[in-house]
Image (cartoon, rainbow, N blue to C red; front, side, top):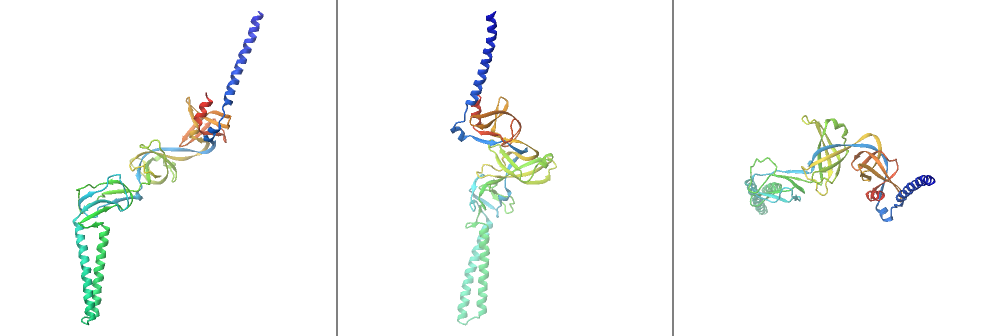
Length: 362
């Protein structure tokens, strides 16, 4: 009986001792992780802040060229298209030759130019003769003045024809040259070699746009109109570049409701330095707007999703990093609003967080 009593006393003591050792070992393991110098240099941190709560409208739209930087080119004359030097989507420089059109109208202007040049030559000769006769006292000063007046008229007519020639980009052989008035991309082309253009052709043959800045156009439903403000921040993602976010602002609100769609159109201006955004691209458009209340906020890359839960690494010092489970209220762009789990002013890790999280959970 004594042996059994001793066993009953010793075994619980051993069990308590074993649990205590395991707990101490786990605590030592947590404390044993220290952020070394190399990882610390590449680790980034952020403070838990209180920010005004924002939300987003998810819209669908398309990319459009800036109409203020778009030129429509119309043929100044009718005729036969001799050569087209560019294709849809090409980048062209200002004054670059786009197409040649052989035209009877140009031939008529060419005749007018030659006639005007000949008239000037004839007027110069007449003036010379009048001056020689005046020196020999065979005519009057009035005759000389009349010859000078005729020369001025001839030169004025020649200048007018030459200006017309220049405006119409004409050259010898009854050729009308279509040239680009600006540098940009050809976004519309309605002309081909051997096409016949009528004199009364009223449709444009080229559209050229500068797309270093573009527009995103979207429709806002009537119930959401009050959330859209001029200058509001917008994130745009295209189907062509699903992993790239283009940021812009609401540039114009068209204060007219479409009777069929019951929506209002808004325009967003976007920078496009690499020309990756092309007119007519489809786009998902997220317009941010502010709500009245405030909430704790952290950068979205501070959150680690694991085991169907969200975690954040709270940094105190290199040997004290705590894994905290948080309840995310909403994510808007690169900001996450946290409902529970964090305190104002705490420091969270926003880079190398996955490596550190894995190390703490080994």
